[in-house]
Amino acid sequence: MTTAPRTVHVRVPATSANLGPGFDTLGLALSVYDELEVTALAPGQLEIEVSGSGAEEIPRDESHLIARTIRYCYESVGVPAPGLRILARNGIPHGKGMGSSGAAVAAGVLAARGLLAGRAELNDTDLLRLATELEGHPDNVAPALFGGLTIAWTENGAPQHKKLLVHRGVAPVVFVPDRTMSTSTARSVLGPEVSREDAVFNVSRSALLIAALTQSPDLLLSATEDRLHQESRSVAMPETFALVGALRERGFAAVVSGAGPSVLVLADGPGGRLEAAEVARAATDGSWTALMLAVDFLGGTVRDQIDARMEPVGDGS
Image (cartoon, rainbow, N blue to C red; front, side):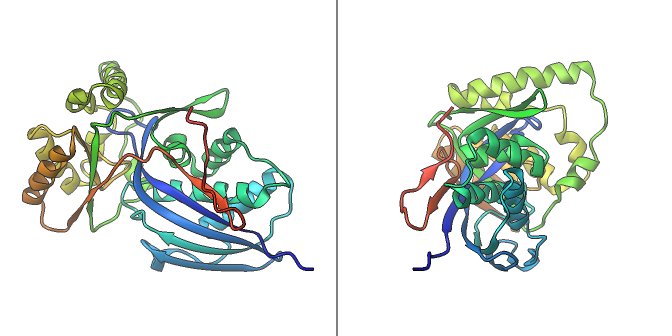
């Protein structure tokens, strides 16, 4: 009797990192998703099908990010990697500042966890460590894995995270342009130093932002002020910063989403984000799409073909 190849199904949310002042630290999971079906094949085989955002640009060979991530996870536990069949449906916009690469890495480590079940265990700490080693920063992969609002930091060389529940009055909307921006390009314009005054300013706003997102959405406009990275990036994304400025002038908590060029507004209710969409429509040239979203509280999920239950990654911590 032959055993059917093991197949796992994975879903991971989009993320928005930084949220204004929380550079490389804060991240928020959003209700746009990449979905993945991965089947273990005989060693040496690789089949990749991709649909949705960025499908025409994504490689179908060994350099595919999810395939590389799964192999990396197998190597980390000393188990020979199998061949892979990967069917990916990308709902997260690529190159727009919504964590598409972080989501791919998160999906890969989750798929590896599912495929390795019964042979080797990857706990939540392992997932975050492996994903951070591949992505470089934990601020996108932490919310993609665990959902909600996450604070990410490094302690003794190891990435850590704390998940927080967002106030139900917070209503996100993301304005997505038809152009892209690479993270490396966005980072290249940042200076090597900041003044003490600006550092203290951002510390105060980051602390305030936690309170605003979890308890007091009425403070979001002040809490999303930033002096650390956004202004430096304006030269690379003038249309983005024109939209951020137009929205903030009207009282909306608008920030660059991740590395850009999308703009995230953290409205204090569904009516607020509809008003923000009207402002954005008047301030842009029609090449922007408004995504009315919710905060994703579940994070990444993985289930086995044999077991229809969808299992979230973390325990809510």
